[in-house]
Image (cartoon, rainbow, N blue to C red; front, side):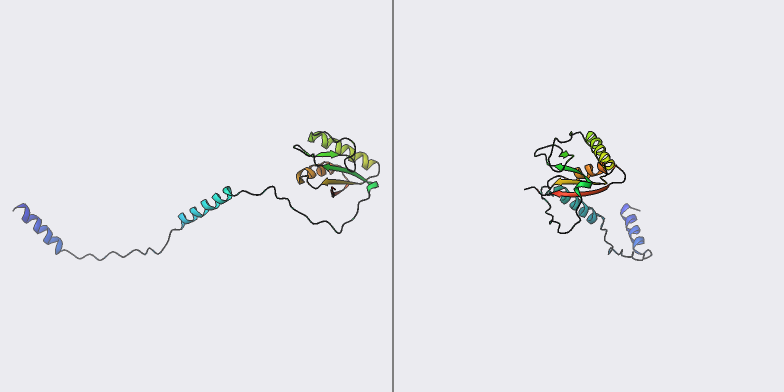
Length: 164
């Protein structure tokens, strides 16, 4: 038998063999959305990083029309004023910018504020009024108020100074 007849016989056997059933067609209607979610998060991160928040925008608060007054004779008054340049605000143990400000060291400021509030409390001044100028950052006012609040039994009041 020659090689060509051997191949022909194999082809005939394959052609006359059993018929195999057709494979079922896979349903590809399921869509994998993982790459789409990845792209969405990448775009979100890009826009968050690329956006420039306007930190210099000042919040304009309306003036208060109602509110209780604080008796100045029965209060220790602490004034937090803008420095007018870089650095922490100026802190005075008086109403307004009277006298010399406290040192810039936060620990020394805290110690002197606590000492002044304790002396005032002993002198019959059960409340503390922290008055801050409009441009002073809240964190600085909160720091001074926290120092004053270390004395037990006082009432803490906050005020905004109207600068002319």
